[in-house]
View 1 (cartoon, rainbow, N blue to C red):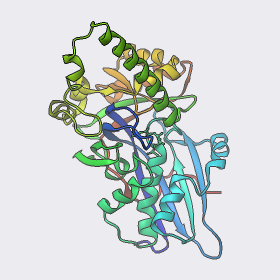
View 2: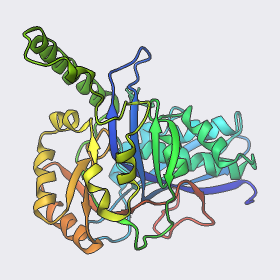
View 3: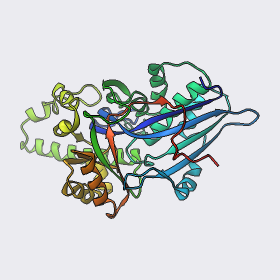
Length: 354
Ligand code: C5P
């Protein structure tokens, strides 16, 4: 109990695998996805105030590609200010847990905005944990998860951390593997490449829908012409039905330690993200050429996550691709990390709110 102030952190994620079905009546896609919480975390402070309404300030940091501490980026912080609104997920998280209460909310942001790493969801997850402590609400982790699912599909994954399976629209969460608070022998190493410009998730899903309809149209034409044997249409895709289950074989592979997961990495949204940002294909290939084992688009992109054998190799990849066109920054991180947790104090690199 901290009495009137709560501090918490929550991890960003990469999707080790993602299968999507076609859009449903509510505008969502059934998803089977496996999240990995990474070591890169957002920090949120919630402080109870009186005599005035709630306010939110987001401080945006830049990650140096040499692996140094995050540095406050005043230009990005100023650009972010219009989003410091009651509609911001961190603000909504505090309002959800303590309706009508007044709080000063400070978000310390290192994850990319609209980057496919659940930055906004991590803010919400950390804000839920911080508000739970600040206002002494006493919700359990499963209750925080349930509350988080009402804010966004990825919030429960940021609350639970580790490696987790998301079904439904990605929000029905089941932890497969616990995370650790520091990297160890079983951890895996990622070079993350942040793009100059973000991609909105709905835009990527819309491009996915467009490609899906195109494929369906082509397939039904082939079927009409008798080129496709009907058995193909009936065969389940790798025994995974999006939103419903995950093939046992893929699940077993994704629960292995370190780089042994490589054969199971998969992302149905990659083609859509790379169609919208074609320059990122060259970035991914450059990661491979610089020594990563493999690379993928994280979630709806545009962040690229390159899986590496060692932290040194990940650092080399980060240096090699940091100046390519379309790249804003590169950093090295590891996974799986722990979910949302309370923090006694903020890290030294966190700047004061004003
Ligand atoms: O759940 P969340 O609010 O984070 O989703 C943001 C947007 O992403 C949705 O409005 C929808 O356009 C898209 N989305 C989707 N299918 C999902 C999850 C998200 O189409 N399973």
